[in-house]
Length: 178
Image 1 (cartoon, rainbow, N blue to C red):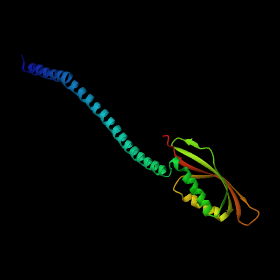
Image 2 (image 1 turned 120 degrees about the horizontal axis):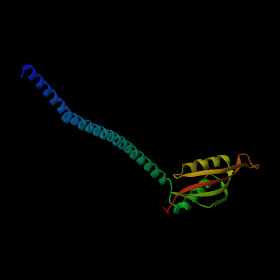
Image 3 (image 1 turned 135 degrees about the horizontal axis):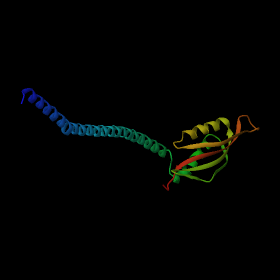
């Protein structure tokens, strides 16, 4: 055999061995490597989503704490239903202290809501407008949640500055059935 022919056969065998090695060893290894890289990227995406969810959950926890503090604050402003007579007497004492004459004070039907009870009280007072204004300011300073509605003021013709006030004040209490 000729030396060139041997070199040619050796070159063909060497190229063939490279092609077979690439086909059966390197190509499958590259496929496995790319599959594993795709899995790692998918897991990294999931990890990023979990990190975002964790951050959102921490924000939600902070918001929940703020809401709980707000609920505690408002519940502290809502006395229990058993104290309704005390609140009613406070309102009456404030009206008398300001020099207002109560014509009528009567409780209306309770409104049960989820978490609180609203007790509307219909009041008719007579007196000086300045005294009535002072009464409203004192009512506003009470450490509980109250709402004044349906306020009707009528001027009395007899004396200057005298009025008749007809209104409903709603006092809110904790619902004890919860």
